Figure (tube, rainbow, N blue to C red):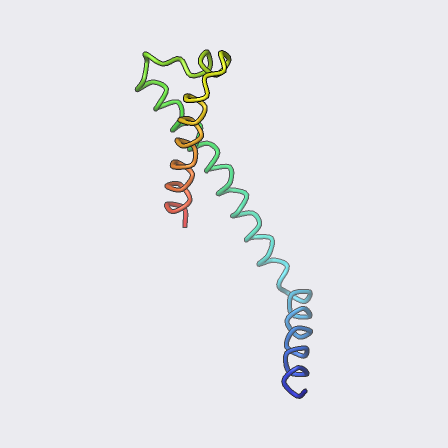
Amino acid sequence: MAGANVVAYGSVRGAAHQLDGGTNVDLSIVGMNFLYAVLGVVLMFVSYRVIDRLTPEVNFPDELKKGNVAVAIFIAALFLAIALIIGRALN
């Protein structure tokens, strides 16, 4: 039972510390996460445009409008691969 009291005390103490002065750190972390998210979206768009330019014989928007599932799967796989690369690069 003494271990539970120590854990509860530590949790309450940690929560009190966050209310005291930890909010500035939390806001900067949120700001950096937002910046990384925006950077990730921009890099994703740029990467898609590069792939679109490298494959001039395939018109991705027209093929998607026609219901071409293979092109949709290719673009989804491309986005996943780029997201993994960008995620690792930003960490």
